[in-house]
Length: 144
Image (cartoon, rainbow, N blue to C red; front, side, top):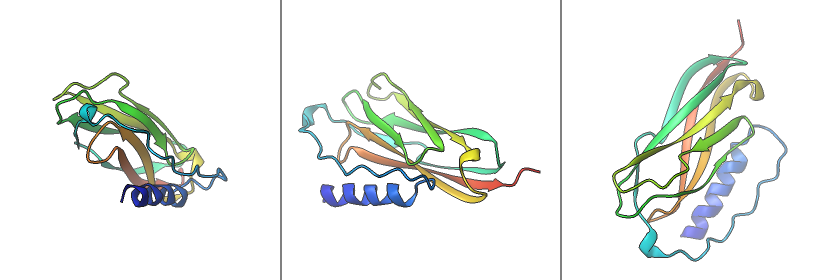
């Protein structure tokens, strides 16, 4: 099941690229994890629609989350689905009950005009699975 999920994530990353010619990395086998350090997460924002922007505009999308488990939550990695988005995230451990965020600085100069749908992949010490896909979308229109 986990292997199928990782393959599905890899396929989604390839499908949603910004048209650059980067090769997608093969899915990595997860390292052995100490299950006593796993926690749970609730995404307060896992999808964001930024509406319409003019070609050339840069915006920031935010995805908030809450640690709903009993252990500190750690973000292990954050990767944008393409070169048009620069991700950032809360670096420190999030205590149980605490909140954090993942952001994406989206540069519309690097995409074509029209509807866009982009992803940010997040790996955390969460159960039942560590991988989370965040999605943002909207419309990029020709500058007036």
